[in-house]
Amino acid sequence: MTFQPVVPFGGFAGWQFLQRTQEFQRAAFDASPVRQRDVDYFQETIGTITSAEELVSDRRLLTVALGAFGLDEDINNRFFIQRVLEDGTQSTEALANRLTDTRYRSIAEAFGFGNGVIPNTLRTGFGERIAGAFLERQFEIGVGNTDQNLRLSLTLERELPEIAARNLQNDTKWLTIMGNPPLRRVFEVSLGLPDAFGTLDIDRQLEEFKDRAARAFGTSELSLIAAPETLSDVTRTFLARAQIADGLNASLGPANAALTLLSQAAL
Image: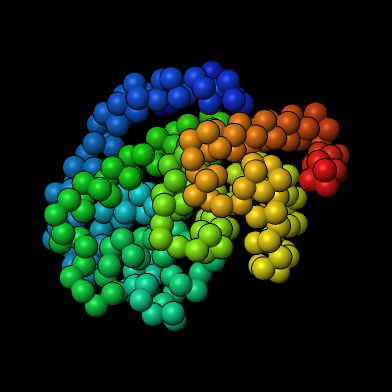
């Protein structure tokens, strides 16, 4: 029987429970025979793969590769993924660089098929690193089967410090978050931004994200927001607002809930 993560309640209390039990639960989750077979196969085989075409032609390999970057739903978009990987990331015209979702750039950069050098699949430790990322994200999916808000909180905790640590301008880091659907959702909710916010001009969105972050967390610098204490504040705020929104959706219906959220966003 496959172990599924246990989350007995939602909100910040559920988050605290998950933090206390995560190490034990991850060990039990990772030990699933099905997952272990997939991970073992990936690590044993990926070193023989030298092209994007070879990767997408092997569904078991592709499952782990996509899962490591949160792109599980693209498992049947084989030719699209092949194009993303073959184009690489060096050219401004590369497909991954033209897509809003920055996860495609991450996977293309990680595998390195289209960057004119030896692909990273041949480098020592590559299979282990991708397999580890796959298991981590699969655990998050398992948590999300019970509570999507806790899944997003796990994603925030894993990805925000990594983005914040990059040698990039602060605006570029914000644009990376804005192009990452799970992280964008966390910040939209925690900053009280309505769904229609995404229709605004990208520069206006960027300024609004930074302005609201400065008001809510005392800074718009992501290197500071990713610090443990502030990151905890972001998580707590997100879970509180998300729990309120979920309650409104359940008790008031979509129309009234939307009006209430818009009112909160204006505060």
